[in-house]
Image 1 (tube, rainbow, N blue to C red):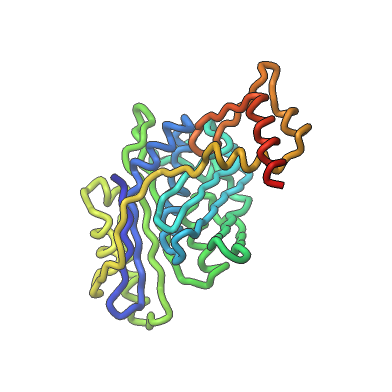
Image 2: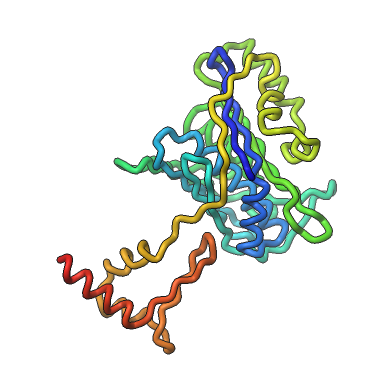
Length: 296
């Protein structure tokens, strides 16, 4: 079971969060049949979505992340909730994988270095917050770090990683961390955190060594008294349903509904996030129209 933890120093100067999302990323790979580079890009953004979603205060709040670069992957989309649960997809899951000289997947080559990172925070009431920043590397973690510095003026370090088996391409490990300086941080705190961050190993290396997500936070906050804010189990969760589709269809005109029916008399709808298929017959559409007329 995947987990997420959030910690803070006892003086309230630094927050650290870490996530082990190995099962979530494996699920995404299975659902979308992604190549290694598509798996790595989507997996990193899923980890980021979980970490950023867990920082939302309202219980029904959601966060939408979109990475739209000029690379062959196309766009990567992730939706997270305040419980740290996530779902996502990539527009070109068949993207060819290239590697750096050290053997690591070149995510930047798939994403592209030119494009945008978009963030939408929806608290379930009022207007959602919308932010967008240019990509700085296409490696995603650096782009998340830049987003916080540029859009929210919060000094942040983000680390994200997905380890893929080179033989069969399957996900072995996936995780990430966020370290953020809060208003109470002084120069000594900043110096200590910078030293800790420079000593941190890649997140998948730490997970492979058996580090827990609490261990990762304590490594990042070495030299400080650490308090756990919360720890939760997280999952790949899709919110699609037949009821939601019927509600959407009820807003269309009858002629528009009938145009959705194919030559077999059926309208097939596939969820982009979980691949679940919903079928609506011509009679189903007529029933939706009748129910709408009864309500009006």
